[in-house]
Image 1 (tube, rainbow, N blue to C red):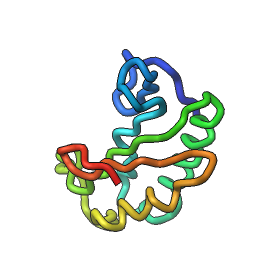
Image 2 (cartoon, helix red, strand yellow):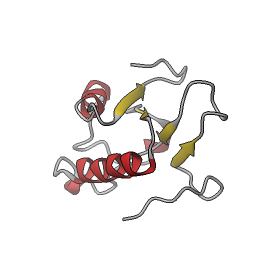
Image 3 (cartoon, helix red, strand yellow):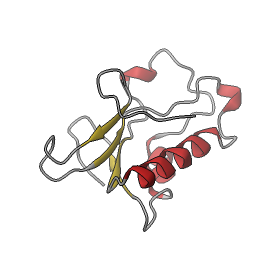
Image 4 (tube, rainbow, N blue to C red):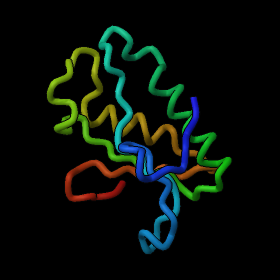
Length: 114
């Protein structure tokens, strides 16, 4: 799996320079979703998030900003079986925060931060 710094062609992964937002320099994760409900809760999302964190460290990002909305409109057509609820989703990302890579969570449509 590779990550690319190509803002024109990436819908869900953005490398944001400090000139784009006043105080944010890092990676913005818009969506991490396991489509097949039978594959959920088997560590797939954790695996890919760890790969993203390694990439963020490699490129010198200061943080990863995550949009964590369990009932996001992008999920309306998907199955909720084995899906995380809002609290579980927030805790999933909170546990990924490390001294090497700060994780900032935005958990509602008004961009409130945790």
